[in-house]
Length: 229
Image (tube, rainbow, N blue to C red; front, side, top):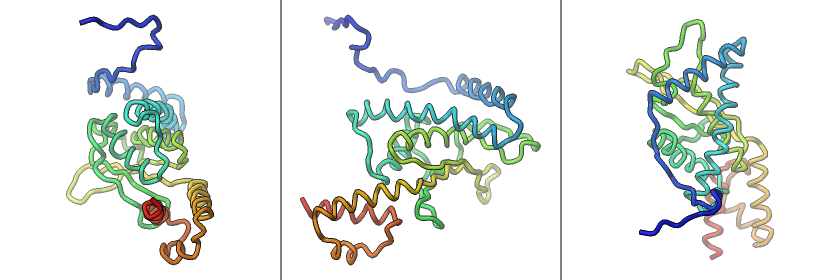
């Protein structure tokens, strides 16, 4: 079998390579990352911010890589689409499985939650009492924020421990709160679309939702697009 030769390394196809790394190696490196940053800060909030910043750069690179491998360099433009992409594709690449759950916030329309019963970065972590509610999940929150921001969906992403009845260890919830400009961006798309179709009255009567209800906006948009085909 003849192997194709490439004169330039940049011409070589991007191989998927090995999909897994040693858990012990990752644990050691992540522990060193946490310990190093701990020496650079004076409080827990600052430590979590530094971990989030470290994760952010990874998230941006993960999006670029996965868009090339999985989507033919196409990026998700729908809110629910990018959330599903993070919950399934990104999570599976990073942790070998999809996230345990993806839920919409009950108090605010622009909030979503990705929950993991045993998040990898918290699995072998024992938090000293003097560090209070320190959550290594801030690193993963940074990755999620990097993916969303690079995809054009800026958001504030934070990690929280949530007690589980009957369980000794709490689950980790990644809370995503989209920036107001995301809502404005969605509304602009609808205004352009409806301006072309000239069916404002029919749209408002059909949707019966507030303009900030992102889920309903996407559902009605999909219905209108399907009807137009």
